[in-house]
Length: 216
Image (cartoon, rainbow, N blue to C red; front, side, top):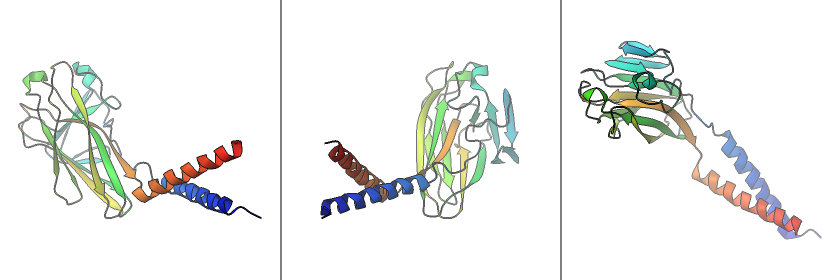
């Protein structure tokens, strides 16, 4: 006679495999392009509206793209280049639409930085809006040195409402003659549903139990 427990264990193992497949089916990243700002390539590029940074559209003001090591400010968090959303008194605004799944939860991860180089205060801010929602304002870390950029990691969770989601990034309402607003390493990651993770963890525990029984 077949042990009833074996049926239960087999069922839970199937659930574990299904959960694994569900997690794998969630795209690791939405297609945010040029999040490391490696385009255009050059020591320094000033992009004014209307202009473009690869897939990013500069819709207002000016955006500076540059290699920080060239200016003795240390390496970029990702790749070779970063951008400054504050240029003199014309803060930059740029946007990009990415392909998303409606009702899917995502997290926008990015790095913000600042420095006291060029007699700047070491403070600044950047605002990010998703679709037509109100922008979220992020203060950069306080710059501690004129010879290096102080970086910190930030994130913004959001839920997609359609197959295309617009991300808009703007320099804070500050005078760029006195402030920097550096940003780099932007990446959008899909977040698996909590129920999927619970199924996965429970199923993996059962698989481990089955493996221990077989080896006993």
